[in-house]
Length: 349
Image (cartoon, rainbow, N blue to C red; front, side, top):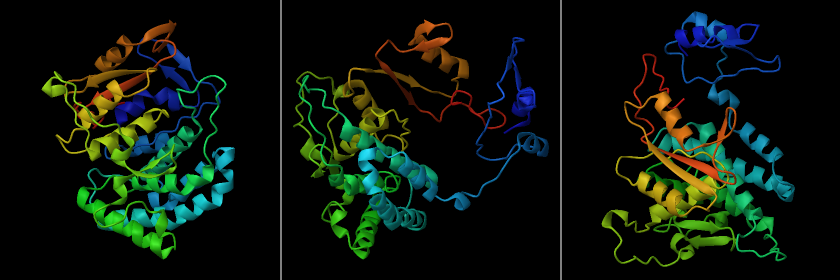
């Protein structure tokens, strides 16, 4: 929030709700439109801008994360409504305690906030529920394969989502601690059997809940044997490891259910390789991937032009991918664009 930005939006924030553009065009917003902005901090805000925007400060602790559970339970599909109590029990048993354990005992690769981790849990859970209802692509007309029983995946899908949301942002040493905490907490609640893996060397991270089989399996048990095609250029060889397989699967189910993904990690850990391998070669045909890399000199107009260049014009002012396709934008080095005077990065916005 800076003074120049607020000044530019001055007439919109007034009661007349008029947006005055540089070209001289004036756009009047309808009475039913209400603008709400969430800002990171007030480091460069003046008292005038704070009062102009009607700022409200809410302590994260005051809101909590339980509200996310309540709103998620309201939009559950009918088939999963009978399991509301089970989801509430799992949430109360694990989630808030897991967040406390994470903050006090674990080291994160990138800093996170509690509501974001819990929202991530529900995104993964939503994706698994959507895949539960999804028809196989190989299914012929007339052959309708009934989905499995919901009760066989309620607990397992929740635990898997918890591991790869709240438990996924920490480093390798912290994952051993989180695995031990999961087993201790589950044992105290009398449900140790719901945690995958045998403990010790085999962590809960080493197991995948297979939706089709509706059981826990090792990550490599679900893959075909890797065969290297002779003559493949060395730079194009990507041998699957347990880390790349886990990341690719998670990226896949989230993308297929239209969630945006941010992959962060240390330099040289293979983020770009995993994403390009998954998005470029292992996604359904309806997806059109487009890669773009940011640098310190990348500008907002340059970003807009790159996106517009691969879009088809539908009608005046409306652009989109070819009919029947979905566009996937992969942005490398997202943090690179130079910051403005007040800390904003226009290409990201």
